[in-house]
Length: 132
Image 1 (cartoon, rainbow, N blue to C red):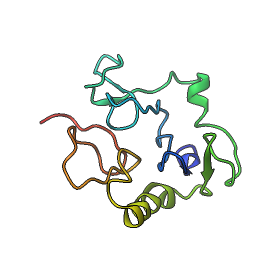
Image 2: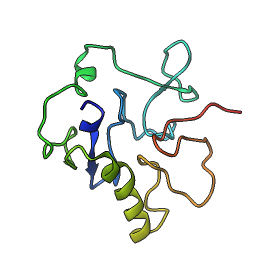
Image 3: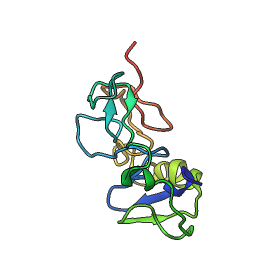
């Protein structure tokens, strides 16, 4: 249930705030995927191709391993979607784009843009892809 506990939606940010796996969400424009990236040595790096993860067992790590009801969100300011990842991960971003336009949903769990982003990202996770 750890990854499905991230099934939530932040109304103000119009996206899922926490990634499926333990990681650090950020609004810093240096990190286009929405979370901190690391290089192959595990050091924080905006050009890194790996998702930075909290130390196993740390308080940040344990955020993903808590018992919560389906109506209790992982992050404050979000509402829970009862462990339904499809709803929060796909349906809500696509609905927002359909209702308010593609520019409205930019950089969330699923980046929807009419032009190619400066850095390629995985369309499902927002994770930066290695440069080719």
